[in-house]
Image (cartoon, rainbow, N blue to C red; front, side, top):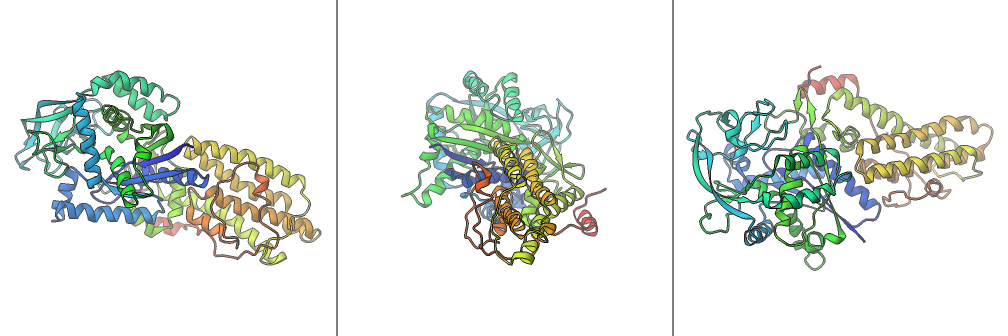
Length: 563
């Protein structure tokens, strides 16, 4: 049987993650991992922090900390927030680990042996005012292609064009803002991407119709422009020292060792229980592993071109990406969520404002899949109030109270089935099949729209059968209606679990059956008749609370969202 390997982009460790990071890679990966596990698939979900490079050095200096201590502090904070949002990683690791160092050296040595590494003297930006060489990403200026005035020296995040710092118009240091920059010669190592261009092009063509358009089109754009040699070393102190004579004082470029971090983190996970776990089972077993990557669109070129080339160039049979889910940006108050500009809602603040499932549902239901999306508290409140409170929460409250008032706190007997129940079964068969298809294809917005239709079907069923009237004339059929409705709650819990795990658990725990989450397959009649008559259940507080206008106004003021 195939095994499913899921990786979420490794966030830079400096600073705290925001909602843009959450929907850009973390949450979609978690929803998919939970979905697969609920279907009984063998699944490994890997994440972690990207710790090397200038951002860590600069962040540590600002906080007057040793860089290793700084990285450990923020890694722990990231992991804490992931737990707060119920992200079900099997392991949250670090790219600075000894395991990753071992894998990076192994891959580099094979690339070097196979002739894919070349030495070249290059010109690099040096800032006298900062007294250091500046990595490409720490040079900022205007993109010569699209005019974006905050383009970085390695890539323009606006048009995704790959850049060199010398391409920028009016370049300046990100660290000090100084425009007093010099170009100095320095020797570096490069990955020979042009040698693999034909092989990569043929492979990426096989991804057409499988990868989302955003991933496939960005990869094709890079190939159309022609692949260039890619530098893999930098003049920095924090990072893995290069194991090659003459380069001992340089470190690997973060974009070389960071994607390899997926493998290194898997080895961290495996090394915890070596008797039962093996990273080779996941990374050197490509015939039996389906690897799905989740990331923001700015990371796509490196995962469709550079990382696959890095693995292929070793000559070893590494697991390649099967499916790549790229997300567009989530915007807020006139611009995209930004760690550097501190624009947006950060995960530590978000979890203090509302339960995790409120955020999880809204973000997945509004995922920026085909275009950039905008977050506003008005939209957030409208979705929570309508979908979660009025549709799902209200259905559950009505059903529980009607049952208690007429049959006590136990599931009534399921009597004769009428056309109303049969039509409900048929409708749910079709909707659940559609929901499953969207989840399989990672089309999350469509999946959530269908899930909402499934919730609405319960309210429509009650409106058609009117149990509040039937109890006055036919208690047997009233019992059938409410038995069906209680089973709908159980069905909703299992279908909603990938996106709202806490809510799903609360829904299942209403019934004293100690049931585990299991994604429904086959005919829905088996799920709508599964609770045995007499099964006790309990009343609970409402699952959701409406977000009132005065609360929305307060949130807008706190987070600087202008009308």
